[in-house]
Length: 173
Image (cartoon, rainbow, N blue to C red; front, top):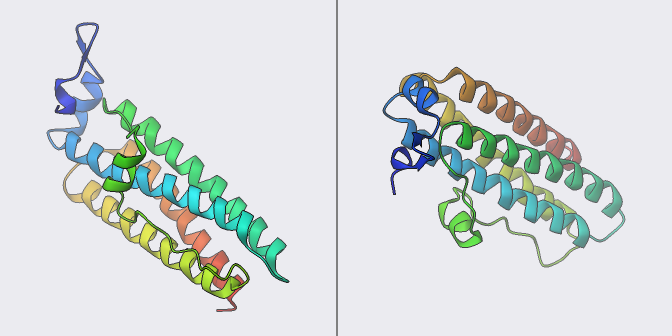
């Protein structure tokens, strides 16, 4: 069902907001849902990796992964809130989340003590997130003029860039 066809209590959802965003609002909601799925997956894998990491640097790595995981969860909440404001609904099924994600899996190394491989996996995920948000910003600048979503995405990409830098520091780059 098209998002624009959703009616609640006889009133089209987010009618004025949808009107201001324009005819590509459903495309924007789809892109936001993909980013939302990425953030939930990142939260899951980072939190899991933090619990599984072993070795001499385990506490340092786990602390950093938990901090980043919590920020990824915050990003998912920000995206879900914006999706709802636009009259859409965030994905609510794990199969749909993994199917719609840009990056449905982060590879946690089998050797839980190989923190370099673990950090490299997280580093790749963060670079992927930066790409996703850069594409979203481009879409918002060229296809849909939505300053509120732009503000949310700009905030998130800034934090993703910070995550990338934190991981690079731990890797000694």
